Length: 153
Image (cartoon, rainbow, N blue to C red; front, side, top):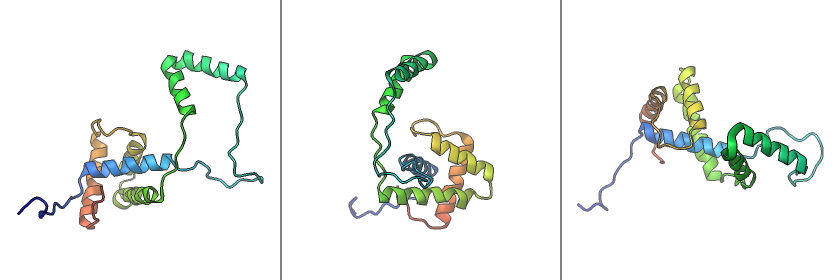
């Protein structure tokens, strides 16, 4: 039998669940930020309120004093960032993954909050997953296995 003939079936593992939850949190962060309907009539163009030169200099001085050159450089990078909204497929994957927390951890509100907070604050999965988070991720992966949810890593 060749490797092409073997069908390798993936099973849920806490690391796959972790990757999907972090991906879902990143997708939510990319969503448009308007949560409330506009009260006034306006155009579809974004509002732009430029800072005066004095306001900009004051802000830069404050950033330098509080965080040094690194904080100022990070702020400047953020100002030049173009926000690309997620695709429909990314939103669908995020909704699926975000539904796992209440479904499989709904009985344990504290673990659900810990896992949700961790996923929202994690940008790099190279760091070790904290123990309480790992326990919650394992609970979710067991639930996904039990419900026979196909793995879409």
